[in-house]
Image (cartoon, rainbow, N blue to C red; front, side, top):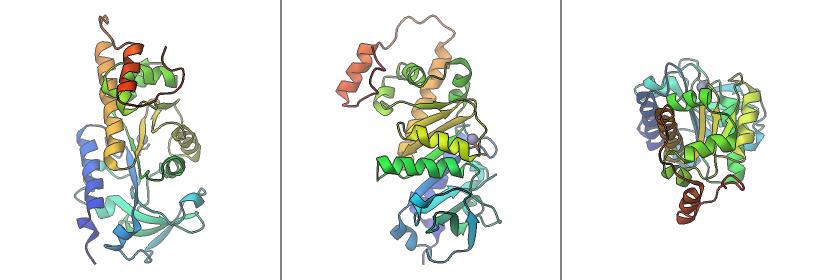
Amino acid sequence: MKDVKESKFLREFTATLSNMYRLGWDERNGGNLSEILDEDEVKKYLDTDKVIRTIPLNFDAQYLAGKIFLITGTGKYFKNAEADPENNVGIFRVSPDGQNALLLWGYADGGRFTSELPAHLMSHIERLKIDTLHRVILHTHPTNIIAMTFVHDLDERNFTYTLWQMITECMVVFPDGIGVLPWMICGTNEIGVATAEKMKKYRLCVWAQHGIFGSGRDLDEAFGLVETVEKAAEIYLKIKPFEIKAKIEDDQLKQIAERFNVSYPDGWLK
Ligand code: 2HA
Ligand code: ZN
């Protein structure tokens, strides 16, 4: 069997973690990433029946029973994962009853999955119900998005609308909008339920004064969504102190939506 460290899925995953670290989004152990893997692909590298450890999930993940996840470890630093994946990330299968993680590889120092596992798995469930090709949930702490949650109101339409106006591309990239949660205690089932509720409508969910969740069919899509929001938030903060002399108007946002054949929530534009 081939070494899983040579697999495209693990290399792309840890390269994404390094990338986010270098962007300054994931200080210390900030952020977490999860991806649903293709079982046939995993089988080229691992005996998927060989469970090395069983870790309780502490919530019901029956909907995901049998699915295999690649996911960052709790307390681990994104910056270290590429050089030492075995200690920093893990691969597990959700047990048939949806109650446990059956560890197949990783968390080698006795560690376990991220504290934000409920938000990840619950969000995966909701996105899979909408899109069978959904695979990735990404949580990170981008500087400008967090800063924006201190100075902008947290109404989802208003928050999204401001960002749509910052870069022409935004309406094309996230026409469906951004969910926003007020400050909440992180790492709990409650914030997981609240995030997953937003994921029924949006592919993005901001956690005020904390960070953002993005989703996608692959790492590029989830990362690209967050990257675009982060850049728009940066522009918002850069221009906020100045008098605005030109802007993208509602009818121009509508033109973008029409030209790129995307639809936005009803009533969000005048
Ligand atoms: O510790 O980002 O939300 C990782 C986190 C918690
Ligand atoms: Zn976080």
